[in-house]
Image 1 (tube, one colour):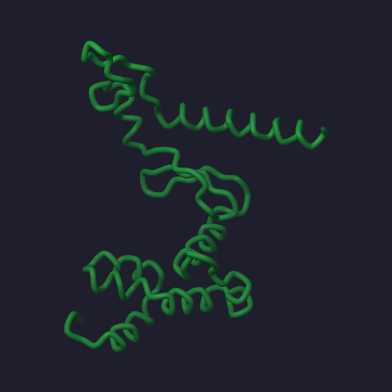
Image 2 (cartoon, one colour; image 1 turned 90 degrees about the vertical axis):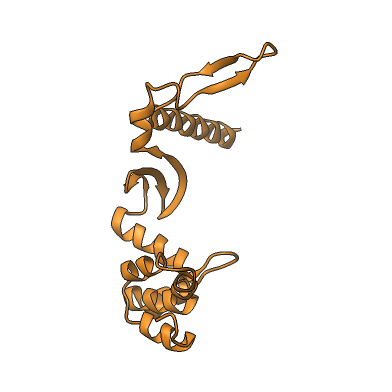
Length: 162
């Protein structure tokens, strides 16, 4: 496939589904470039959700059809509300299909008690390390974020009543 003309490669890639297209992006730089073409992802979007939806969700600004496809697919899988999802070993906060925040990884849980791998702090004037706070696991991160979210919601309610 490396020696084939670009237009022929694109015609072949048109037969791939979104998972195969995403896998093809990992083969080589050329395939990554080819499999990222907007026309491929636009066609996949239209096949999955129709021309009307494609016209409504057409990418704006710096988004690509691949971004739009991923968001719509995530909406179909997890819904529109505020959700915490896991993709692979990574956790994300998602709202209306858009990833709002990366929360952490399963690997973080294994490293929580191993302070040699994960320390936060500063170097003192004597050159020693002073730890500010212990490392946080995924559950801690989720709880802290939920606390921040509740604070923001109460601030927004307070501002509306004023």
